[in-house]
Image (cartoon, rainbow, N blue to C red; front, side, top):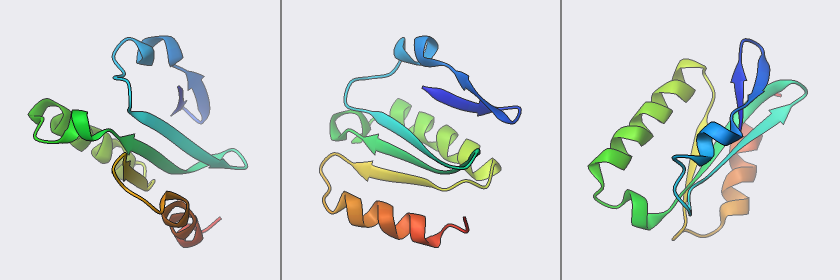
Length: 94
């Protein structure tokens, strides 16, 4: 997992793999050198009525909001993901 820190990406793959549950994916879309959109795939099993996961999600939402970067959440039980991603990218001023 790459994390944007101090104007550059830092590889946090080893640290992230120690807590990242299966079925939960994160993607950051970069335009040039600027991250413009975060995408998180939320597994139903880990998010439905799980207070600890909901707390972590709120923390992530706050981090993205603090950096004025949208975070698109896609549930694993959803559909039309490509259209939702395209619509979100169309809203971003690149």
